[in-house]
Each structure stands twice: as structure tokens, then as C-alpha cells.
Image (cartoon, rainbow, N blue to C red):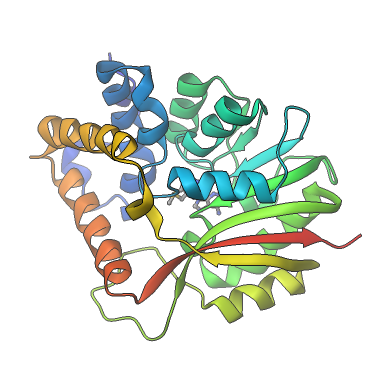
Length: 269
Ligand SMILES: C[S@@+](CC[C@H](N)C(=O)[O-])C[C@H]1O[C@@H](n2cnc3c(N)ncnc32)[C@H](O)[C@@H]1O
């Protein structure tokens, strides 16, 4: 039995399963299977599909001054690519927190990092336990009314003057439809207000070019994973629905309506 067969809902349930569950949970299992088939060097690009480029990850790691001893947690860690990258490049041992069970399990198996199944609204972590928190592509998938509670939790688990690193897809104005299901993109101003309301000061923010900046060697591995997934699951309506979701987001980014923003914020002392 493959990793994904243990957890996926039946194909006929496609329309009953929330788009995000398909995108974040089902695809996680399929992605793990693809990495097993292609080889371990595909794990990090596969585990970062749809989020940070290597230069985004490096920018955040330098902003958060990550080292071997840094106590760091990745909230909404997905399949664990960004946390795996930190472990690989900076020798840190990030704790991963991810609400989708299959994604958390796939990440744990692929990268061997401590992984907790939980939502960011109620982190099962001690107050002040971390020097740094990173969260990539997560806040724009959290419904607006829940965001203040999420950001307060990110603050709670950080020590005084600890560092927060975010990748947030922000809206640059009214968005043309059809919009991706389950995403709610804040404006940069709303994001700053949210962070300040939870006791953070924005140290620096920078618009990223996203995966356009990724080296060909990285992109080739990410594309190989995509091609394999399409070969294995192309006829599955759940794959088609996930593709539709990806295309809607890509269209918003391509049209400049939504931009990836890297943010470094610092917790109050
Ligand atoms: C676009 S993915 C990014 C995954 C990963 N951070 C990366 O960059 O590859 C968004 C992730 O946020 C997670 N997520 C959604 N709502 C969340 C919540 N309330 N608390 C924690 N994570 C959440 C999803 O399950 C998904 O894994």
C-alpha cells in the first residue's frame, strides 16, 4: 500500500471534499509517493510546491538568523519542504505543526522532523518556547475572522524579541474572479495592522518574485514531480480540481493582483 492509499477519500467523493483538503492533504500523500519513485533529492522541491522558492527560504532564514541552536517552529508546515530545507542548509531541527493529517505524516516520513497535528489557532506548544517562528503561505488560507487568534498564537510561542518570518500572498486591489476556493488574501496594510495588534513590529518586508527566481535545477525537480503526479492522477477529478485551484492562483499572481510578500517581524520585548 502506498502512503496516499492509507488516507485518501474515495474518488467519487470529489465534490464533497473541500478544495483545501484535496490541495493540502490528498496531494501531500501523492507527493510523498512521487518522491519515493523519483528519489530523495526531489523531496525538498516537491515539499515546497506552491510556496517558497529557494531564495525566499534563504531570505527568511537569514532574517530569522537561523543556526543549529535556534529553536524554530514551522506553523502550517505542509509536506515539510521549507522545514526540511532549514534542517538541510542551516542544521536547525524545526518543529513542524500542520493540521492536515496526511500532510503531517508525509512530512514526518520524508524529513524525519518532529511534527504535531494541530491548527495554528491553538498551538499545543509552550509559551515563549521558540526563538523563531516561520509560516509560509498559511495566513492567506486562514479565514479572516480567525487570523487575529492565529497571529496571537504565533506571538505566544515566541520568546520576547523572537523573530517571525512569513510568506503571505497579499492582494494589491480588488481581485478578478473566479477566485481560488478557501483563500482570502489580505492587503499588506491589513497584514501590518494584524501583526501590530498582536505585539509584533515589522522589521522588513519584501516582495518576492516567487518561483520565477528558482534555479532551473530546482524547477526541473518540481516539474518532474508535477509530471509524475499528472501521469498517475491526471484522470482523477480531484487532481483536476487541484489544478484548477493552482491555475486560479497563478492567474492572480501572473496578473499582479496578488503578490508573494516576505515579512520579518519581531515580537515585543
Ligand atoms: C500553501 S500551503 C503551504 C505549506 C507549507 N508552509 C509550504 O510552504 O510548503 C498552506 C498550509 O497551511 C495549512 N493551514 C491551513 N489552515 C491552517 C491553520 N488554521 N493552522 C495551521 N495551518 C494551516 C494547510 O494545511 C497547508 O499545509
